[in-house]
Amino acid sequence: MATDQIGDAGALLPARAAGEAVPAPGRSTGPVQPGEPVEDEQALTRRTFQTYVAASLSSFAAIVLGLPIVGYLAAPLVSRVTASWISLGRADAFAKSDPQLVSFSITRQDGWRQVAESRAVWVRTESDRTVAFNGRCTHLGCAFSWRTEGEHAKRFFCPCHDGVYDASGTVLAGPPPRALDRLETKVDNGELFVLYQDFRLGVADKESV
Ligand code: FES
Image 1 (cartoon, rainbow, N blue to C red):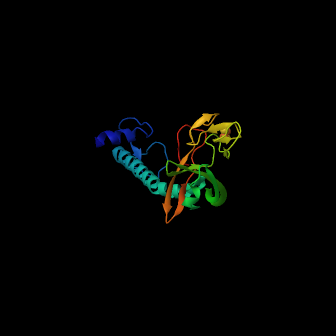
Image 2: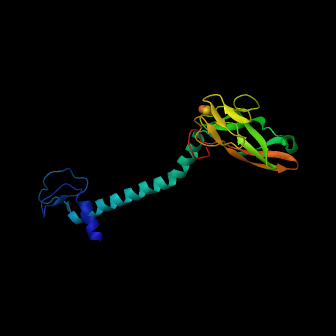
Image 3: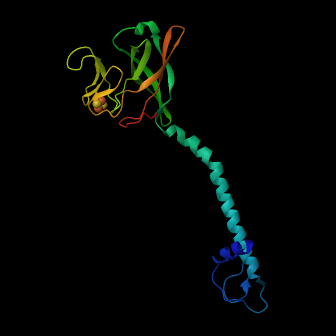
């Protein structure tokens, strides 16, 4: 096995005729003169093989040790909104038939900067359960609204490309590829909280971003 590996590494050396003397390290190339120090060809091949192994191990160690550092440095370069609990106010304020819009500010990581942006959720009571929808249309992220009258009465309507959702968030018409994005909620000491996060737009699956 070891003999085979040495043989492979030796293939990288310039071809020499069998039995030809090899100049000692540090000597310029050319024919070996009588009396000049020579080095055993097997010893040279072994040393070359060891050099390749050492270089390979060093490269591997550098990659393994460097990956966490690269990950740490690159992480802030990704634009993302970290999910966080947002207070929406008193829970009993949402015990109404029509959905209520609540706007607030979130912090988005943009490269190395933190950027404050406004976001909104629509909150409605559904079978004694509070439901919150992310305020961005799942098509391209436009703000939609709850219509109380007209052609789309009792529906959510997105004016950008005429996207229509029913009260439960299901798509009724237009290009939105999926239902409205539901968010987790909780009530703590009479106060309603929503776990706000954004999701990938324009795709059928609900994927956190
Ligand atoms: S962004 Fe809402 S329908 Fe296109």
